[in-house]
Length: 328
Image 1 (cartoon, rainbow, N blue to C red):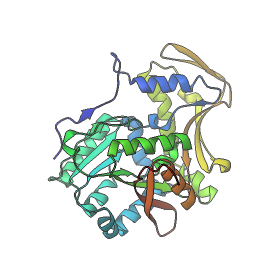
Image 2: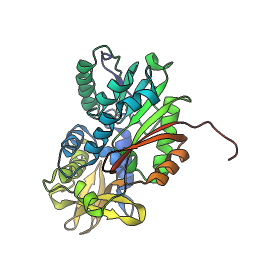
Image 3: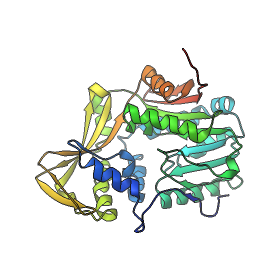
Image 4: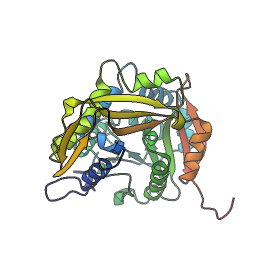
């Protein structure tokens, strides 16, 4: 079962424009290295393109994470237990979610996503598969503390953050998000989080620049979204997608590269890019055991168990909300 309409917590102006989206675009394109936070890639069109990406041969993370969820269900049941409200951050189409829900027998499911129509369609589809599970979709920017529905307030919480989305953020932002998740979920919560692992550079670059060009369309859709929603005039045909490995920061970077000098407007403001100048649209940081543990601890979570797929490409980590301490 689902709530009738779900909650809408996105702050929009009188024209229906997401204020945070506009602010991030205008601020990011005013910097020397133009950059836009990766979460804005996921409007309805972007969310669908990402679902297409998860099915391409080069993109291994979804298959690897699904393998863990399928093979380790008994361990999830034992370590997490029944009766929790599962709160999924950035739920998208919730493809992996049924594997977790079947394993742990939750009391409720709360998907959070910034793409409202996509969110509600996915929640309705999940309700067919789990007709007796209360489902409360919430349209919200989960980078900020989210007020969860009253019906789950007294339930113990399990945060679910699959797909290594945490890797999209620089360390400062990732730590802030983990702390915000802790505030959203409460003191006794647990968190099941996906983190992609460091591996061969060629494998990584192919995963973010597939031969069929799906990832390129996903990246370019951000420029199209800006044009649609912010009265933009970005010449999309003059941009190209680029994925590059940055070894110093252990991350894949996605950029939109200007193929010639361009000028455009967004929300009444003028911008320009020189040939070969880029808009940095996404990071995808890769982790090892130590760096993943350090990040979680900095964000207020203590790792309690870690799983990898058989090929050692991807990890799922179960963590619990850390008890505040005044000294080591």
